[in-house]
Every structure is written in structure tokens, then in C-alpha cells.
Length: 349
Length: 79
Image 1 (cartoon, rainbow over the protein chains, first blue to last red):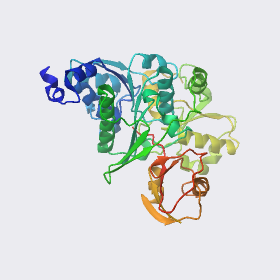
Image 2 (cartoon, rainbow over the protein chains, first blue to last red):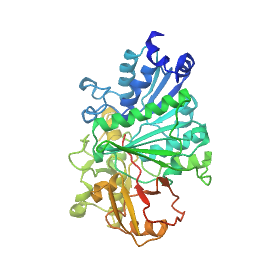
Image 3 (cartoon, rainbow over the protein chains, first blue to last red):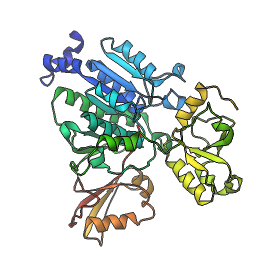
């Protein structure tokens, strides 16, 4: 037990607390910037079981902030690499990696196996999915998110407390790190604040950020807390969950059918955004340049639009429809997911 | 009536400031929210209002007072 001696001597931990840490089962959704920051500390503290969910593969543009990965890992699943590094650092920790994206289909079953859920994703729609699945399975969620130099941290559904929907009732589209830019130190700080909340929940000590939104600004080193209360009018039922998370109006790309022969995949990201998807079916026109390229769209053609968060894809779909290019739909996959699909299947075209 | 408006997230990017103290004509949170949403620069950005560090419901109408600190809090996606 020498390994944990320095934390066991804390009156808030002790042998009993260390036992609680060892018995904890924490599921981390997202092995990006926030996940890479908080995972090593949870493993090092002796968390008995860590689950990591992410379908992304490691890209060069991740390396400035996702510190578990090195250039030789490019192209590998993030969760597999994270597991390998953490396991080497902390052999006593049991780590389960899930190289898949969280969805309405797998969320409830996954959550059932864990006590605490950590939201370290970079997509708003997944944040609602995590929230709703956590309510149905009665798990607390430790939430962290980033916009440039600012981060938000809170704890949802803790002892039936307020949830993400009490804070932000409506799903909206906002820019991700890929679109807005971020410094590694900012995600590091926010990830660490999340890890600290996880430890407090396990140890039942301190005051937990339930019903409070902490906003930290890394440029000014200011932090502020905002109180919010539970909205009893918001009720998450299984039907609501299925309605919101188990049906998608977005089209999923299918490389195995003749899908691509009839379709153009329209990438509306700016040309410098990575990863680029080089494929005969992909047409690259940034959202801001759609109007000047309007004439090149054919009304009889099917267009499936994608970007990074889905926000610009929706704007592009609306714009094209306004201009009578009606066979236009947003893709369920974002650029990163699409890149993974393109590299993992043989394309017949 | 003079209040302090605090901006967060994308609102800072668009408005170029974190905070301003200024006179407003609106006397309720609903009227202020309506006024802010009509501002073309920020109308497209979703946010919640917090008055003196307490979030209010979009459908809740709070009477504003001189010196109130009103925060505009958007959701963030990044991680």
C-alpha cells in the first residue's frame, strides 16, 4: 500500500477512502484532450476499474493536447493506445477500452457497468445522450467542456440533482475544438477539475459541483460559479430516449452499397481543416464559398453534407434547399468518423 | 438603470469584451433577453441568463435591479 501512502495519510482519504477508490468503476466518454488529462490521474489514484469509450483514431492534430499519444501511434484507436499507456503506468488498474462511439444503442448497457460517468466528449449531441442515459441508469455525470480559453465543469444527476438539460434545455449546435481552436493547457486544467470532482464523489468529501456550473478562464485565471436548480418539468423516459437517441434523420454513409455511385459527399469545412478526405465521391466546398459555387450544384444529384460538429452541414443543407437543390441531407458521420470509415473499408467505385 | 453584463464563450469572440457596465432600458429579464436576442451580432448564439450568479429559466421573468450582474452563458462543445 506504499503506492498510495501519500494520499492515505489525508484525513479525507484514509484506508477506507482508498478502499472506495479501489472499488470505483468510472466510465470516461471521450479519449481526447479532456480524457487524456484526467485518465492518468484517476488511474494513478487507484481507481479500480476505468472504461474508455471513443471511436476516434489518433491524428497528428491531436498531439499538441492529447498527451497520452505519440507520433508513432498515428492511425491507432485512441482508446487502445490510452489503455496501453495507462496500464503500463498503473498495472493495478483494470482498464476496458471500447473502440466505438457512444450511441443510443450502446449507452444504457455500458453505463450499467459503472458508478460514475465522465463526459469528456466534444459534441453537444453526445452530451445530451450521456445526460439522458445517465438519468435512466441513475448515474452521476462529471461534465467538462471547452470553448477556446474557457471551460465549464459541473456534476449532473448527482443524488437525483439537476442535469445538463436543467442547465441547457435545448440542443443546439456550437463549435468544437477542431473548429474554434484550443490550447493543450486549457483542456488540461478543465480535465483536472473533472478528475477532482470524480475523486470527491468517490470519497464523499468536500462540496460537489452539483447544481453549480463552474466557468474557468485560463487567459485571465478567473473562475466563477453559477447556481442552477432542478427542473421538475424535465422528465427523461425510455420513450423519450428512444425518440431522441435511437433514430437518426441523418443519413449514415454506407460504402458497401451503390450509395456512392449516386451520391456526392459534400465537405463544407474550410480547406485547412484536418483530416482531409480524399475520395472520388467527396466534393470540397467550404460553407462560406457555397454561394459563389451555387451554379455547379445539380438538382437531380444526391448530396450528403458533412463537417466537424454537424453545425455547418445543417447550414449548408438549409442553404442548398433554399436554392432548390432539394436532394440534400446531412450525414450522421463527421469528418473524423468518415476518414476512419474510408480507410477501413474497400471502396468500390 | 445601470447593470453589468458578463459575456462568455463565443459571445466574447464576437463582442470582443468579457464584461461591460452600462445603462439598460429593460426592467425585466424577459425584456432584456428579447433585446439581446435581437442584437444581430449575437442573436445566432445560444445562451442562458444568470442574474447575480443564479441561472434563470428562459420562461421565468425576473425583475432587474440597479447594479445586477447579468451573465450570458453559452454551452460549449469542445473537449
